[in-house]
Image (cartoon, rainbow, N blue to C red; front, side, top):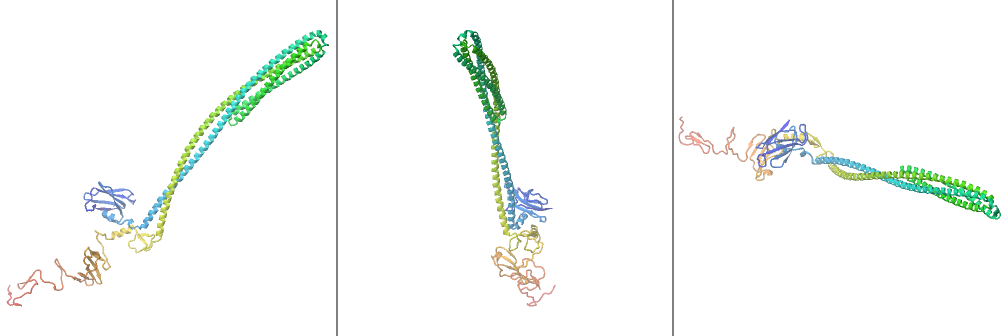
Length: 622
């Protein structure tokens, strides 16, 4: 069902409004209309319009060409609404007109509290999310910072290990070089020992030859033996000395062999140390200590090798010196052979022993040379290990560089994450401020709502106290605790008399004296009931609406007998129909005269009849 709204759209001067569009926008959803839908009507040139409008509440806007939109107001169309003009609906009472101001303010406060509570919830959620993001970013930043620190420490450790490995490699290389030089010296010393041994052998051979010659000349020297007895004794002591020298040479040769064995052992230790250095170079964490230890061992072994070589050289020199002394002793024995025939044999035996000792020295010298070659090979191996250690050190250095680059990348990432964490912390702080502000507004609105609720006490209202009332749609209730609904208001409105243009279809009952007045600015007419009479009494002139009862009593009706009394004269401008009873005290002339006995009579003068009250005879003919 729809309600027809029709009429003529006029301006303030009563002229029809042309080129205008009436727009109705639904303010809420009803059973047939969806909120915010728009309907329109275009009045004709005379301003006439007619619309069949569905039930609901609408916002009315007038769109006049050449002017901005004008909001005319809000209308509500009910199921029981009567057809009318747009003016009637715009001027009708609305829900807001009958709603208590306190209740409307309370509803507004409730809506504001609800909105602020929603905003607080959203801002709180945003603040929690921002705080969570900031915490996560801070955690990631801390993790990346830890990773960066660990990478930096690893890089520093690798760099230190690389430096240690390089130092160890350098030390090993130096040790190997020293070993090579010491091996060369040992070889030279061995060569010298071999040469000295050859010289000693040659001297021994010469001594043997000289001894044979001395034996041949023994017979010749027999004559001088007696005289050279003391010299023979001296020569004997020299031979003993030569024997001791030969024995010392043998001992020295044995010592040289022992030293060469020690050198070989040292070279083996050096090779092991070099192998250990290579292993340690591959293992970055323990390379430094073990390489240092190996280097120390190599250094010690080299020192021992050098000492052994030096000892071997000294012993070879001593052996050569001993051989020289032995030669000198042999020469001295040869010169005294003529007196020491018996001693010559002993000297020949001593010479043979010296030759054997020299042979042994030669063998030992050769062994020393072999040992020196082994030391040289061990030194070369140490040099190779040192080179391998250097290569490992270079690899460690490259790994340290990579770790440093990774650490730098991690540090950059940590810085970025820290910046993001700072941004998230700032956003969280802003969200927190917004949430606190919204919470403050919500608390303020809630406080205002509580104040309003407290003002109305949230109790039942009465005629003397503010409070909450129950709605009622009854139109005949006498309760002072119920409030009328819009439906009840509409029902009363539909049955009430409008100020203008309305027609009463029922009775108008007035029980109050002087209740009805008709007036203008100059005069007023009061309908006054007094006991059994109803009077129409004018007010005093010039008093208008609030004028007092005047002195004239122009008209009254006896409510019991129905007699009408006119107190200040009657002027009749038209005809009077019906029967009139009473006298003609106030009549002076009849409007249409009538003839009596031929004499006209209008009531204004006496009638003289001939033969009756005047002389003469009446004519009775005809």
